[in-house]
Length: 130
Image 1: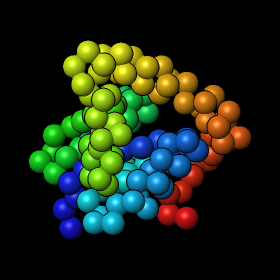
Image 2: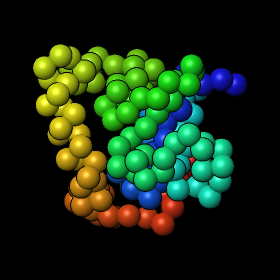
Image 3: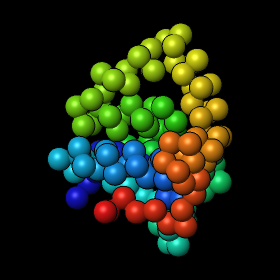
Image 4: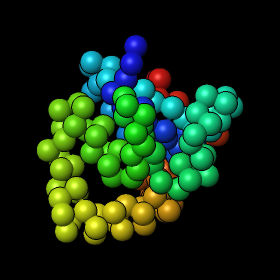
């Protein structure tokens, strides 16, 4: 099955995994694939994705093989589950520049933010399947 969007996420980040679980639950059409960048076989299967860069900023790939980054991935994912209206303002001209800067701050501090929101800074390998 071909997916409309493949999301490459940090499987050691409890907050990231929580969002992926939520998206997976809402993805009734199974339009998305979720790939943990820390899986042992990840680099073999996705040699075109730099794990260090994907660890710094969310990466995604559309059905045509085009790479998406950061909030573009977030907006594409939420659009596929019918909730793109929630993230659309983050991509509007003018607001997108500010939103991207805030996102980069969030991404760089996601472990500390995760600790505050979930009680866990990191997990060895969180799972989106349970």
